[in-house]
Image (cartoon, rainbow, N blue to C red; front, side, top):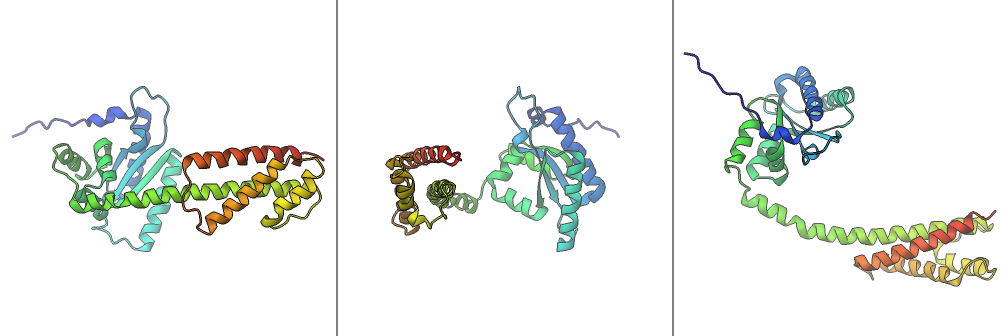
Length: 268
């Protein structure tokens, strides 16, 4: 007895431009030609899924899940896979960005309800699928894939670390401003025929060679001293945190300083 099996059209396909889908599908076909059923599935996802009205092709994210249960993934296999995949990307489109996951890792992420993989399942469209991606996508829509307790806490405990890192990055940005000020001051002193001094002597040399010759206002020497002191206090951990407002002030001073140094360094 024959019976018709209705075809399934993924509603997510409407989120992607036809050209993006076609490029991703062409890549998937080439991957399947090279690797066969070693490729468990490929799926279009990510940054390509944008609101309607977008007309330009952007980055095209493709997930490739490889079956590490059927084939042992040693270094030689991984390297060969990487080389062949990169070659196919170059031949297909430079806009492709490939994310490769082992089947065992992909399953663990799904089982734990990992937010990144869940988002891929939520918005993605399968391209080549050996009964992996589409069934999991259906289970997600049915509410049968939920985050584990371990996954919840793993993600939550990242938050304080990320907050700490954000504060550290602001400190590093302030140090970058210091080096921008130092480098520009060194350039001007070199223009004046001076050998670049060590940082602690830059302000004094600017005072002697620039301010006393009426080439520079004293406020720029003060800015130099301010940044040298700031650098010392950060590196000695006397300053452990800088607010956004404070950073904006330092940025303004650094830009003002560098603009003035630019005027001086152009003097010949």
